[in-house]
Amino acid sequence: MNHFPEAWGRPRDDVYGPYNPSYLQTTGPKTHTQSPAVTGSSILGIKFNGGCVLASDNLASYGSLARFTDVKRLRKFGDTAVVGFSGDISDMQYIDRLLDSIDIRENYSAHGNTLNAKNLHTYLSKVLYKRRSEFNPLWNHILVAGFDDDKKPFLSSADLLGTTFSAPHLATGFGAHLALPILRRLFPEERPIEEITKDEAVAALRECLKVLWYRDARSLDKYTIAVITSQGIEFQEDQKVEAQSWAFAETIKGYGAQVN
Image 1 (tube, rainbow, N blue to C red):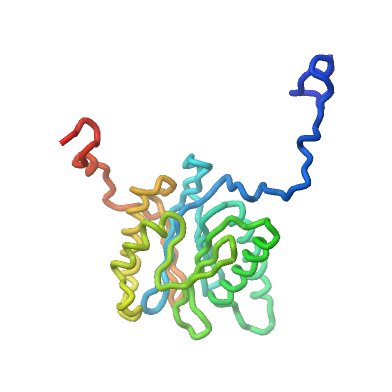
Image 2 (cartoon, rainbow, N blue to C red):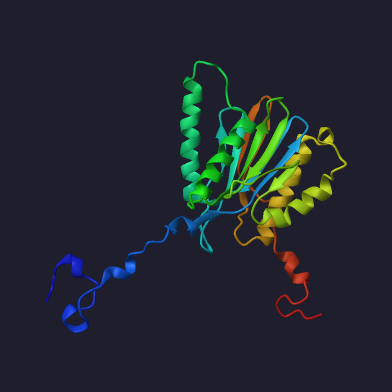
């Protein structure tokens, strides 16, 4: 009997023939980064008079399993910007290390200038596009919120292809289908940003997170909100969806034994 470790788990050579590992060899591209294992869902963002708000739940799903329930997907960059991540958590951690290295260089630089949200978004979009061009994408969709060169509120997105988009309110994941219609109804295009207050923006995102909790199977009732203003960045962590109840399901036709 062959007791060598390299033979463990293999069929016996004397019965099935020698082991042939040639099927493992391929000349094709690596594809392991194209199958995200642990992922985060929606990021929501909105601009208001004097700043921006970002929000995300704290769930990281392992496939369809709600595996990690305390993953913060909003990343503060200095005192000027916040980055929100949807998609693969390991790629999020890689980008987070890139941001750490930039932050250190900025703090030790002699010129005294710091990157604002617009600069940061440009950098991250180039990183995402470079990795996409190498057929080794970072499987993330990000939102960057803060201020631009003119000290005006800035909110923009970049996806795994390096495609960028800016708007007064943005969402990734299922939020693009479920939350954006709510935000567009509450804050139509004809309503200027100068009329939107911070409290209105925060309340709208809380309502959207409540809808996602009920409708998105990859969402969670615990979430984080980041408010970016000229005075700094305020994080409201471990918030809970308020007044949640599934009692309304009893009034829905087809629920349980109800047929009328």
